[in-house]
Amino acid sequence: MRTVNNSPARRPTLKEIALKVGLTPAAVSLALRGDPSIPRATGERVMKAAAELGYTPDPELGRLMSYLRRHREARIVSALGLLSLHRDPSLWAKNSFLRRLHENMVKRAGELGFLTEDFFLNDPKISATRMRDIMVARGIKGLVIVCGPAPVDSIGLDLAPFASVTIGYGVGLPLHRVCQHQYEEMFQLLARLRGLGYKRPGLVIETETDRRTRFHYTSAYSIAGRARGKKAVPALLGTEITRDVFSKWVRRHAPDAVIAHGSAAAHVYSGWLARMGKKTPGDIGLAALDVDTFASERCSGIVQDYEQVAAAAVELAASQVRAGEKGIPATPKVLMIEGRWQDGGTTRRQRQGSRAPIS
Image 1 (tube, helix red, strand yellow):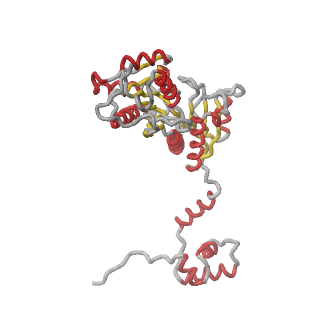
Image 2: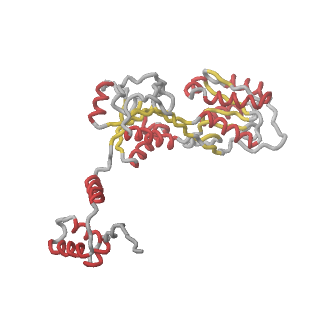
Image 3: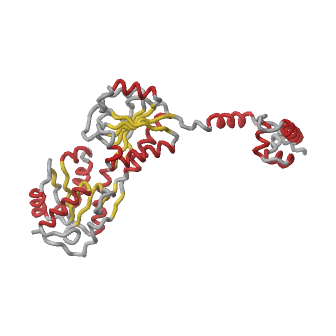
């Protein structure tokens, strides 16, 4: 029985043609396209060899290669505006947090093929309407909005022409946002302290910080405290935490570790504890929920990955631009980035059954 083979004949490759005529595959490719850089005689020789081998061009591949050649020098697909709600443009460079955000937003945007341009909404010389028109004229398709020193419910800028993403909770608009996973970071920090043998950690946090983090820290701390029962230390909250209030709280509740919001606060509390005759970490541990890795003194706690926050915000904005999304989204997305524990020397493993008295 004769088998009928209906599969198409194999197409000769550029490499095979090149071997036949003694040229490189790149030169053969140029010759087959009629590129003027190839001498006419050489081109005719290549065409003849291709015909003898049964070569026929692939039209789909030809269209693809033509597209790639046309766009090889124009890989920037769009532009993203990095919109700061801070009044002072120099803060992008002066403030370590903002500098890290900005550098990594620009870096990630470039990797994705986007240009970036900085804008400052509180510039008194430019109205919000004028700024929108400038953004549109410059081809801005998406915005990453960085909140200023105070939270706002609106920014006064028409966002209809743009895909918009904000960082953190400072902008109250229902936008896509990227945030630190503060709720989970509190559980992570408490688990680390528990693993070191601390049994009575106590949280100290100002009410404004608590509000700006959407009460995630205090909520997680409270829930974890229910599991500890009578051993739980009540959180110290206040508009302003003073040394007197802090000292009374320590004496009354005898925490074996103090949880501060940031490295700066932890350094202050360490000084206050020293005045009480307590050494860190010998007598009492200290851990921060937002460790400043640029600080001169190291502190144990959670390092919040702002580089990843910046990159994720750009990625989210870029995905919305490519999807053609504009304006206030119907279903805002919230992307959480969890930080990591760092042992900075202000905590240590506790000896079984040991506990320094607080006087």
